[in-house]
Image (tube, rainbow, N blue to C red; front, side):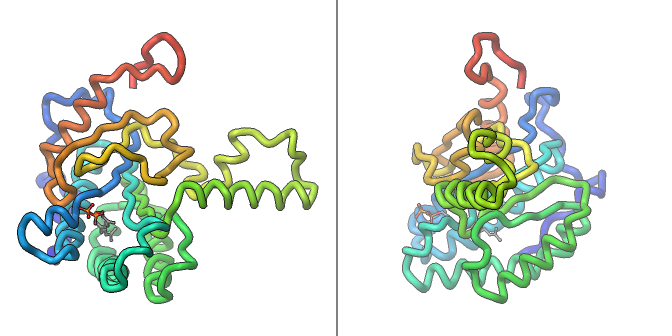
Length: 260
Ligand code: FPP
């Protein structure tokens, strides 16, 4: 597996932002549902897991491009709470892949000043992976570059239930009254506490679903769906998504378009 390309701190190798993009209207936070790894592999006569391997390369490319083009946060849906129902071999492959990628990429992430966070029920992951995740989050927590969130064993409904439980516990302890609970309280109990919501959701491989991803946080996100399978997602596909975003009038429920 190749290492991350040369660092964003190395200005000579920074990928230039396409001229067609309006720099002042880039989304601050992009979320991606990386779908189509299996179909990509099948169309090449390869085992499904080869699609996941190729998907890692597409994710590295996307992270690098987002960082170089000035996007502040990227959140990727790597493994959902529903993905445990896949065949055991595929689940084991993915867990091992996450471990291998974390081991091989951590130095590059540190060098590129990426702040990596894993969001989800991390206790349910294999012990070795949990240890690598803790180490990666600690070692990059002070970095000032792009925020990179990897949703792993993540489910939007479960996240909301967990938030409700935590608020209920606080109410029982007398720390806050049920009537005082507002959107800020709930948002503060989500895995994404303290982060801005995504402005743009990209889903690859044509499916028109949210699939239990960031149910609260995507309330006002623009949605871009492309037929490109995730392993083929590249600079051109990202540019298309960003141009699509820039063509939208974001009104947030009001009447006047608000410039993104
Ligand atoms: C969906 O495609 C993809 C996944 C469930 C896994 C995505 C994971 C990666 C790209 C690896 C990321 C690695 C790190 C370290 C963050 P699918 O299998 O559902 O494709 P299909 O719909 O064509 O079957």
